[in-house]
Length: 204
Image (tube, rainbow, N blue to C red):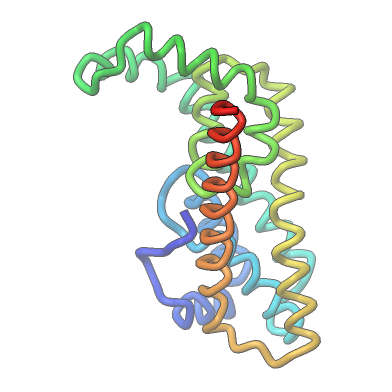
Protein backbone atom coordinates (compact mmCIF):
# COMPACT_ATOMS: atom_id res chain seq x y z
CA UNK A 1 0.00 0.00 0.00
CA UNK A 2 1.21 3.47 -0.84
CA UNK A 3 1.77 4.80 2.68
CA UNK A 4 4.85 4.95 4.85
CA UNK A 5 5.11 4.30 8.56
CA UNK A 6 8.76 5.17 8.51
CA UNK A 7 9.17 8.77 7.47
CA UNK A 8 7.54 11.89 6.08
CA UNK A 9 8.08 12.98 2.47
CA UNK A 10 10.51 15.66 3.68
CA UNK A 11 12.55 13.08 5.58
CA UNK A 12 12.34 10.71 2.61
CA UNK A 13 13.67 13.44 0.31
CA UNK A 14 16.60 14.03 2.65
CA UNK A 15 17.43 10.31 2.68
CA UNK A 16 17.16 10.12 -1.12
CA UNK A 17 19.54 13.04 -1.57
CA UNK A 18 21.98 11.59 0.95
CA UNK A 19 21.93 7.89 0.05
CA UNK A 20 20.31 7.83 -3.39
CA UNK A 21 19.99 4.43 -5.02
CA UNK A 22 20.33 2.46 -1.78
CA UNK A 23 17.19 4.04 -0.29
CA UNK A 24 15.30 3.63 -3.57
CA UNK A 25 16.14 -0.06 -3.76
CA UNK A 26 15.30 -0.80 -0.11
CA UNK A 27 11.97 1.05 -0.03
CA UNK A 28 10.65 -0.48 -3.25
CA UNK A 29 11.77 -3.91 -2.07
CA UNK A 30 9.91 -3.33 1.21
CA UNK A 31 6.81 -2.15 -0.62
CA UNK A 32 6.55 -5.28 -2.77
CA UNK A 33 7.13 -7.82 0.02
CA UNK A 34 4.41 -6.17 2.10
CA UNK A 35 6.22 -3.76 4.43
CA UNK A 36 4.42 -0.37 4.13
CA UNK A 37 6.45 1.98 1.96
CA UNK A 38 5.62 5.04 -0.22
CA UNK A 39 5.75 3.29 -3.57
CA UNK A 40 4.00 5.41 -6.23
CA UNK A 41 4.84 8.58 -4.30
CA UNK A 42 8.48 7.51 -4.14
CA UNK A 43 8.76 6.82 -7.87
CA UNK A 44 7.06 10.13 -8.71
CA UNK A 45 9.40 11.92 -6.29
CA UNK A 46 12.42 10.31 -7.94
CA UNK A 47 11.29 11.72 -11.29
CA UNK A 48 10.91 15.21 -9.80
CA UNK A 49 14.35 15.08 -8.19
CA UNK A 50 15.92 13.87 -11.44
CA UNK A 51 14.29 16.80 -13.26
CA UNK A 52 15.72 19.14 -10.63
CA UNK A 53 19.19 17.59 -11.13
CA UNK A 54 19.29 16.31 -7.57
CA UNK A 55 19.34 12.63 -8.54
CA UNK A 56 20.94 10.85 -11.49
CA UNK A 57 18.62 9.21 -14.01
CA UNK A 58 20.13 5.81 -14.72
CA UNK A 59 21.28 4.80 -11.20
CA UNK A 60 17.88 5.83 -9.81
CA UNK A 61 15.91 4.04 -12.53
CA UNK A 62 17.95 0.85 -12.22
CA UNK A 63 17.65 0.89 -8.40
CA UNK A 64 13.87 1.31 -8.63
CA UNK A 65 13.42 -1.55 -11.10
CA UNK A 66 15.81 -3.88 -9.26
CA UNK A 67 14.24 -3.07 -5.88
CA UNK A 68 10.72 -3.92 -7.05
CA UNK A 69 11.88 -6.97 -9.02
CA UNK A 70 13.91 -8.34 -6.10
CA UNK A 71 10.83 -7.93 -3.92
CA UNK A 72 8.78 -9.90 -6.44
CA UNK A 73 11.33 -12.71 -6.56
CA UNK A 74 11.61 -12.83 -2.76
CA UNK A 75 7.84 -13.01 -2.33
CA UNK A 76 7.60 -15.70 -5.03
CA UNK A 77 10.26 -17.78 -3.29
CA UNK A 78 8.50 -17.31 0.05
CA UNK A 79 5.24 -18.52 -1.41
CA UNK A 80 6.88 -21.41 -3.26
CA UNK A 81 9.05 -22.83 -0.47
CA UNK A 82 7.55 -21.56 2.79
CA UNK A 83 4.01 -20.45 2.10
CA UNK A 84 2.19 -23.74 1.59
CA UNK A 85 3.59 -25.58 4.65
CA UNK A 86 2.80 -22.52 6.78
CA UNK A 87 -0.66 -22.16 5.21
CA UNK A 88 -1.33 -25.84 5.85
CA UNK A 89 -0.49 -25.45 9.54
CA UNK A 90 -2.36 -22.25 10.26
CA UNK A 91 -5.23 -22.67 7.82
CA UNK A 92 -7.51 -24.41 10.31
CA UNK A 93 -7.08 -21.54 12.76
CA UNK A 94 -8.11 -18.85 10.26
CA UNK A 95 -10.99 -20.76 8.67
CA UNK A 96 -9.11 -21.61 5.48
CA UNK A 97 -10.28 -25.13 4.77
CA UNK A 98 -8.88 -27.33 2.02
CA UNK A 99 -11.97 -26.65 -0.10
CA UNK A 100 -11.65 -22.88 0.29
CA UNK A 101 -7.97 -22.95 -0.54
CA UNK A 102 -8.57 -25.03 -3.67
CA UNK A 103 -11.26 -22.56 -4.78
CA UNK A 104 -8.92 -19.58 -4.23
CA UNK A 105 -6.10 -21.42 -5.98
CA UNK A 106 -8.17 -22.17 -9.06
CA UNK A 107 -9.43 -18.59 -9.19
CA UNK A 108 -5.88 -17.21 -9.12
CA UNK A 109 -4.62 -19.71 -11.70
CA UNK A 110 -7.24 -18.55 -14.20
CA UNK A 111 -6.03 -14.95 -13.89
CA UNK A 112 -2.47 -15.26 -12.69
CA UNK A 113 -0.72 -13.97 -15.82
CA UNK A 114 -2.58 -10.68 -15.95
CA UNK A 115 -2.60 -10.46 -12.13
CA UNK A 116 1.20 -10.64 -11.95
CA UNK A 117 1.62 -8.32 -14.94
CA UNK A 118 -0.92 -5.60 -14.08
CA UNK A 119 -1.23 -6.21 -10.34
CA UNK A 120 1.49 -3.60 -9.79
CA UNK A 121 -1.14 -0.93 -10.36
CA UNK A 122 -3.39 -2.24 -7.59
CA UNK A 123 -2.20 -1.60 -4.03
CA UNK A 124 -2.53 -4.83 -2.08
CA UNK A 125 -2.70 -7.00 -5.20
CA UNK A 126 0.94 -6.28 -6.08
CA UNK A 127 1.96 -7.50 -2.63
CA UNK A 128 -0.20 -10.64 -2.76
CA UNK A 129 0.29 -11.73 -6.38
CA UNK A 130 3.94 -12.92 -6.14
CA UNK A 131 3.18 -14.93 -3.00
CA UNK A 132 0.20 -16.56 -4.71
CA UNK A 133 2.30 -17.20 -7.81
CA UNK A 134 4.73 -19.15 -5.65
CA UNK A 135 1.98 -20.89 -3.68
CA UNK A 136 0.30 -22.08 -6.87
CA UNK A 137 3.63 -23.24 -8.37
CA UNK A 138 3.51 -20.84 -11.31
CA UNK A 139 6.47 -21.77 -13.57
CA UNK A 140 9.45 -19.60 -12.70
CA UNK A 141 10.29 -18.69 -16.31
CA UNK A 142 6.73 -17.48 -16.78
CA UNK A 143 6.72 -15.55 -13.51
CA UNK A 144 10.08 -13.82 -14.05
CA UNK A 145 9.14 -12.70 -17.56
CA UNK A 146 5.85 -11.17 -16.40
CA UNK A 147 7.49 -9.69 -13.28
CA UNK A 148 10.23 -7.95 -15.29
CA UNK A 149 7.80 -6.55 -17.84
CA UNK A 150 5.28 -5.57 -15.17
CA UNK A 151 7.93 -3.83 -13.07
CA UNK A 152 9.05 -1.69 -16.01
CA UNK A 153 5.45 -0.86 -16.96
CA UNK A 154 4.80 0.26 -13.38
CA UNK A 155 7.99 2.21 -12.65
CA UNK A 156 8.41 4.08 -15.92
CA UNK A 157 5.06 5.96 -16.12
CA UNK A 158 5.26 7.37 -12.57
CA UNK A 159 8.90 8.33 -13.03
CA UNK A 160 8.20 9.98 -16.39
CA UNK A 161 5.24 11.94 -14.99
CA UNK A 162 7.39 13.16 -12.09
CA UNK A 163 10.18 14.11 -14.47
CA UNK A 164 7.94 15.95 -16.94
CA UNK A 165 6.13 17.89 -14.22
CA UNK A 166 9.43 18.60 -12.48
CA UNK A 167 10.83 20.03 -15.70
CA UNK A 168 7.72 22.03 -16.54
CA UNK A 169 6.81 23.43 -13.13
CA UNK A 170 8.31 24.06 -9.74
CA UNK A 171 7.04 20.97 -7.96
CA UNK A 172 7.44 20.96 -4.19
CA UNK A 173 8.67 17.44 -3.26
CA UNK A 174 6.36 17.57 -0.23
CA UNK A 175 3.38 17.19 -2.60
CA UNK A 176 4.60 13.79 -3.80
CA UNK A 177 2.53 12.02 -1.15
CA UNK A 178 -0.62 13.33 -2.85
CA UNK A 179 0.21 11.20 -5.89
CA UNK A 180 -0.21 8.03 -3.88
CA UNK A 181 -3.48 9.24 -2.38
CA UNK A 182 -4.83 10.26 -5.80
CA UNK A 183 -3.83 6.96 -7.36
CA UNK A 184 -5.42 4.98 -4.52
CA UNK A 185 -8.68 6.92 -4.92
CA UNK A 186 -8.65 6.24 -8.67
CA UNK A 187 -8.09 2.51 -8.10
CA UNK A 188 -10.90 2.30 -5.54
CA UNK A 189 -13.22 4.17 -7.91
CA UNK A 190 -12.32 1.86 -10.77
CA UNK A 191 -12.88 -1.23 -8.62
CA UNK A 192 -16.29 0.01 -7.45
CA UNK A 193 -17.27 0.88 -11.02
CA UNK A 194 -16.37 -2.61 -12.24
CA UNK A 195 -18.24 -4.20 -9.35
CA UNK A 196 -21.42 -2.18 -10.00
CA UNK A 197 -21.17 -2.85 -13.74
CA UNK A 198 -20.77 -6.62 -13.18
CA UNK A 199 -23.75 -6.60 -10.81
CA UNK A 200 -25.94 -4.87 -13.40
CA UNK A 201 -24.91 -7.40 -16.07
CA UNK A 202 -25.83 -10.29 -13.77
CA UNK A 203 -29.19 -8.70 -12.90
CA UNK A 204 -30.01 -8.17 -16.57
